[in-house]
Length: 202
Image (tube, rainbow, N blue to C red; front, side, top):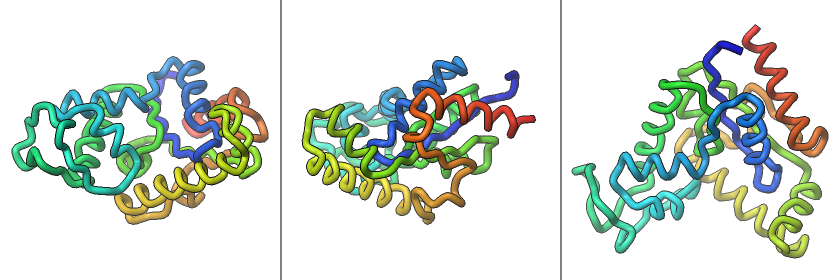
């Protein structure tokens, strides 16, 4: 495949979306930007990476306090920074990476950020029972605790996406492809997405 590859991966919590993205990256030889994106955003903005981790895919205003490192953005103060400013920094990093080469982005409303670029927008979902089992097994918690965590995480992602995009998280019409990862598994889902990408690019 000699075309520029840009894929955005939205996902329900516990659906294995990040694992699917990593499988895609491995199969395609393309870098996956998740935690790495946070580090790049922090490096370029001059703020502590911890600030971006704490605010990641959550809509709120963050007090910097001891998280503040060095600030190259004159409009931001040492005492507080709005979520819109963080989103703008992060979005600029996403677009810069996408313009320079192949990339796979996990979450962070990257489908919206790259809406004017040739990007394959994918959403990974799975039934609640499958997600509960995955989260409970991964974190060593009960199924009841797993469901509570899933609902909390999904709500945070939904609020974040809806606030910044003026659209609706997880709605099929926002994406090129929505896939239930519980049917084919992580590797099979990644293969399915690659086949879809090949067909899309003709």
